[in-house]
Amino acid sequence: MNPYYLPFFDSGAQEKSGLHPATLANPLVLEKMISGKKSNLKIGVPKEVHFQEGRVSLIPAAVGVLVMHGHQVRVENGAGVASRYSDHDYAEVGAMIAGAEEVFSESDVVVKIAPPSLDELHKMKDNALLISAIHLGSIYPEYLKLIIKKNITAIGFEFLQNNEGNMPILRMMSEIAGTASILIASELLSGFNNGKGLLLGGVTGVPPTVVTVIGAGTAGYYAIRTALGLGAQVRVIDEEIFRLRRLEEVLGQKLYTAVSQQNYVADAVAAADVVIGAVFKPGKRTPCIVSEDMVASMREGSVIVDISIDQGGCVETSEVTSHDNPTFVKHGVIHYCVPNIAARVPHTASAAISNILGPLVIRIGSAGSIQELASIDQGVKKGIYAFRRHLTHRSLSNMFNMDYIDLNLLLAAHF
Image 1 (cartoon, rainbow, N blue to C red):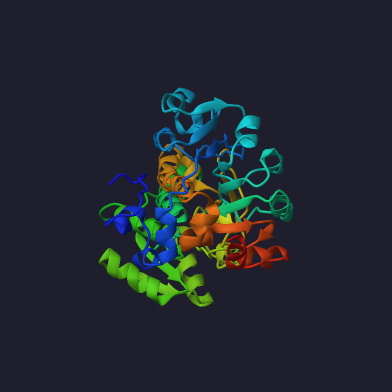
Image 2 (image 1 turned 90 degrees about the vertical axis):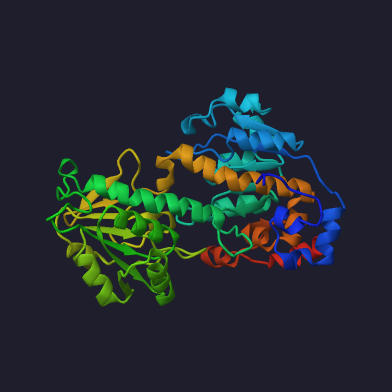
């Protein structure tokens, strides 16, 4: 089945639409699907200006499908170059190649990776739709206030859900980050990087390296799987026992696991050659799990990769670094704290994101507007954090002490 195909109602509507059967049973939903309120959208794909962000929100294949659905797509000059997609690739599938000013000012829907800068927000049309990440660790009140002032409807990657309650883009990026974190740690352990001079996993007759993973969510799972595949001894810490039990069931082997009580965390960190910080709290800053004293207890040349730095970091000694200068040493321990690890592999990451955003934009067009789609799709509704000049996500409201209103009330008033 073509993942970009958005159907009208027929006997296979549940499978083709991706909507839950209970959603399709709602007469209002069926009425909206049959009514044919499809609108042709003007979609903008800007070049990312965020520091060291090489991904692009929509790859040429996705843009081609959008064009075939009757939408107009403007792609900024060079938007896909860092992900190995040329302007020619986009032009061949029907995209208009334009400058940044035109992409922002002429688009009803702006699809980005990183949250736009204030300058980019100023360039956007009032009443436009923004789809991008939020980056809770670096968001600031002025950004939200400008979105509200311009009556921009904003959807955050971190909040979007599918019908199973999963966060598809976040999950996809977590898969990449979890796998990459072990490969990064393996490089940093080498003697040429002032590490312990260890081969991650070891060899026959030599004890394996010890990897402690803090957090058993998606990023943690893929870090654990990769570390086990390389032959490492893995210890896993998480606050939820059901996650630890599920890990053992899925991986089919017994692991060293412990709940995140201070004494268990301290022991697992002190014994580790590598610590992977993979804690994630949806819509919140990451809590600090590993204290500075725990870091000081690690042996010299050990490695910490704090994937959670995107949301503030789960290691007390973590400080944001860059891809150009990714590490620093504290208490003799090598720290890797680069936000957005997925940007190391922009071609893969861009394709993965585009596979989710492409169908989403098509569904918005087929529904007639984001308001129409949000009224029948709970997952999309959960992704909206600003609507009709109001903040509609409680955690952001609490974080910045800003007024909040329930999105359901606004949608009801809209209709």
